[in-house]
Image (cartoon, rainbow, N blue to C red; front, side, top):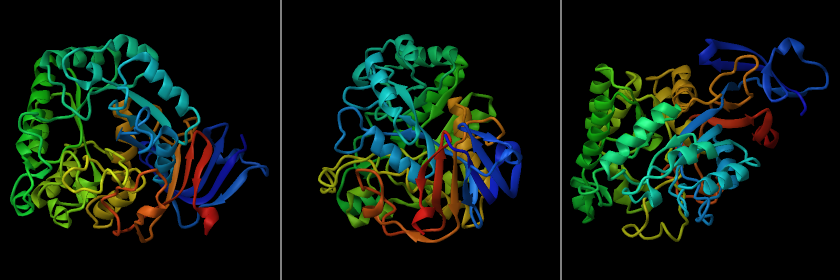
Length: 423
């Protein structure tokens, strides 16, 4: 593997308190002292660019196995690389579900050729049905890095408690899809917009009730829980309160909840339909507040590809939108571009903190650490779905102008995305 020397780049490495201009040397897949560089290295001019640790996306649906017309492991990781994501957590609602060691092995084997590090989530219940527990020990031995029934809540509370206890002993997180199934089932956020559309709404209470249960379990049993895709003001408030009480809870939200609201649904375009749904403006502002005060630790995408045919009917279409390729740019635009968050704090939310939650070797550009980084430029660009790198194009950011753009991504010491050569 040839050395890579990035010269004169702005280095943003929060873990090591680096915010400076300098050189970066990558040797044998790891960060090395730039003083060791020789004439044989591949030289990259980083002038005008910022280099930061590769992003870690805690919430990705790769659709592989079983739904590879939407996405597969290799195409999903190409999209990840184009968005600066070098590590991702693959959710278990595949077909078959990730509920056997064989399925775990299939994903990990295929991911060896991918442009990002793929970490696998094992399902808590068989087939995500919520009633029969999986063999967590067998899944762990096969290589899972987390547990979840994401896409659905775990219906049986006793099974959820058992999973949280086992995960704590194994040192892996439980990532919780918080939803009361008896309140859920709508297509958009319940309220004025759902009434205007004449479409069944999904109340914020569905998410809030699910969040309350998981927080109560974490508090009662003294075990950690990670709350997925937080979208409501009330859920954020509960997480904040429980954290103050010392409960071991971490949480994520997504770029679309930071930038968009339910008003987008008036376009009657299913690309703006996801679960949880886009909420009200007061919820959007609450997500930003929760990020700023540390209530929410991470920004993840809930990358959920669907084909154009599946998304063609506003009401009948499945929930979900893609997000890895636009996640950093969108978050940068709404948070850094507006002056409410520093670039360093954004990198913490999208790289350092997620790596810590998942307990993986990422988010750190220190000497000897795995060489995962991305480089970006502060420049405006308009999201064109046709130019995105994944199989599906169902982005809610289409047509929007974003304020930063990923230019190059290195994963494991290998350049996996390079727009610089196209300039």
